[in-house]
Structure formats: C-alpha cells, structure tokens
Length: 120
Image 1 (spheres, helix red, strand yellow):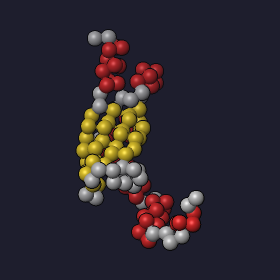
Image 2 (image 1 turned 45 degrees about the vertical axis):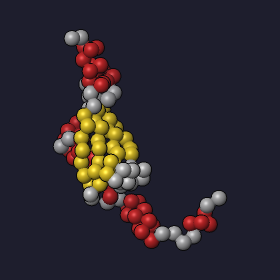
Image 3 (image 1 turned 90 degrees about the vertical axis):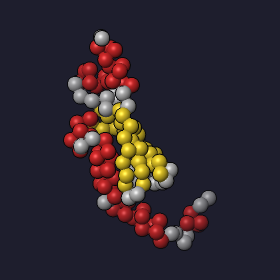
C-alpha cells in the first residue's frame, strides 16, 4: 500500500461516538486526521468533530444554539482529554462556566418583556 493510499484511508476514517450531557444524548462524528496535508508536511493532525444532539433532537447545548456544531482541534488535545467524548464534554463544561453563557441562560429564563420593540 502506497503512502497516498494510506492518507486516503485516513481521510475517510470517521469514528462515531455517543455521549450524554444533562440527559441530552449527543452524537460525535470524529475524524482524527482531518487535514492530511498538515500531517504530511508538519507531522501533526487536526481532528474534526461534528457534534449534534439526537435525543431530544436539535436541543441546544452550551456550545451550540441549534443542536449541531463542528469543532476543529489538534488531535493531541483530543487524545489528552481522553478521546472525543471527553473532549466535547470538557468544551461544554468550559462554555457552561462562561459569563456570556450564564447571561444567555438568565435572559432565557426570565424572558425579555421588550424584545418585541427590537424586532423590525
């Protein structure tokens, strides 16, 4: 098998993982070697993660308002976190602690009496 064939196989490799956060089931499509040119030239991998909520479908997470998002990270970061599931949960926890997310949650909980005035 040539080096070119090896790279093609790596590019097609997608691992599907599942996790759960606060009762929401999450599907993670993980491509450990997403941008193969970097591996060939610089000897490191960028990983691509596609995250979406599957039960209940489309429910927002701290890292996405639509229930679907993608992330690109160094593969070493994903490995150091303990794999794609642990990495995504770590990113959710980080975002969950941010002041911006807490403000969004508070606004959503309280509602906005004057939101209609901002609409055009």
